[in-house]
Length: 131
Image 1 (cartoon, one colour):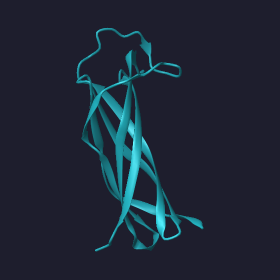
Image 2: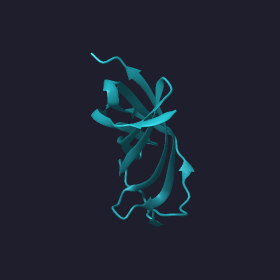
Image 3: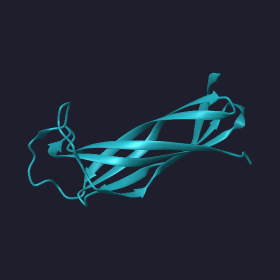
């Protein structure tokens, strides 16, 4: 049986990715949902993404939006995002979010002047013994 449980984020650390030496992407866990399943938990997270240029683009061709094509970009993970959550019953759950793919739309920016990027992530979690 699946039973949603209340969860409170006690601590959170953002992650960071460098994309092709041109862009830095910071991402953080912005929302956590937890459900009890059998003898364990299932965790879902929302991820907030903010990107900044390290080197400004030579030319801007348009605004980032629906239909803008992204290309796969090489990237270096500087650190993964993590959070510690306390669920109902006092269970402590450690959550980790790591990027597995980054897309970059060359020449496109957001209305705020940020690079047009997409980030695909994977979420892992484990229960930790409360001390």
